Image 1 (spheres, helix red, strand yellow):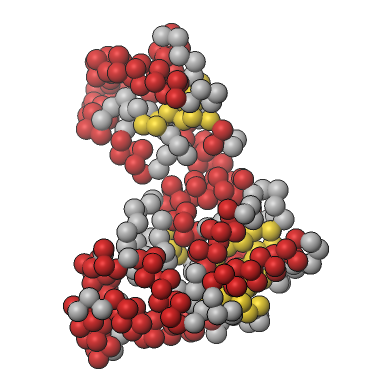
Image 2 (image 1 turned 180 degrees about the vertical axis):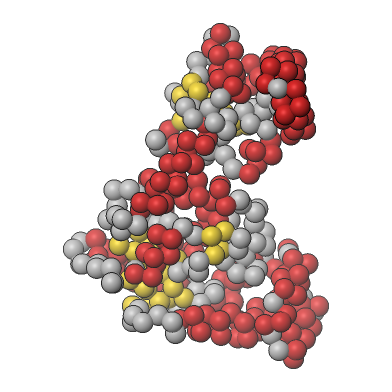
Length: 345
């Protein structure tokens, strides 16, 4: 199922929807968070029939509003099939679909609900390792514009999986700054969707991430593919790295968040370096803050991790982003045109 070809309607509660939802889904909840909790309590105390009666009392007054929203959605998404889902494809979505169909709105129920998609995701992640693709891994220190180059490659149609983009996290102690937190389930759903889009590709391009991106854990097949992949080591002059980081994080807009992040890594810095960073931050000398963090936190940690690799990467080390991108694209073109990419091991 290619999810983007449909318009999904999620009738679960707002809290369930917020945790994770199908791509592009519109939330038309039958019950508020509190109403759902109350019905659950009624079900446990008084049984299914009483809970159903309570649910009908709540939903009845909302029917007119639900109809208006569905009618408007049908008009706005002309040409797309309306697919309604709840958690397990039970009474919530079933009754909603039946009612809308009686009112003349053509829509379908997602069999098995969003739980059926979760099962597909789990199956895919478990079995993907048995059908390994060739991985091209962009590695490099913080500020070498790896994410920017992945985004440009994806726009040009290359088979990119932007893990940081999917996780809504830049993969460091500062990675959540300016980003909306995403749940593990939503990340896995979005990753699965991208994998389905790339299922006919013989290779995948990713960034060299660790096992975790913020609070998000990567599936084993991604970690294994990265470990066995062909690494392209990207570097940039320090001034360009400073510009990339500044343009990415906009530190002047997130002063307090940056201060909090520095406090979280305080024990990984010497007291002298920590005090220098704080003084620079107080002066709002963000360039100096970034420079100190690169020299005393990011680069030492990256160099330590780099030593664990046994292979020799292909160096992408021009003095500007444009030239680095050109080198990467040329390498990919050569690979696509017939070079053999053989996974290690």
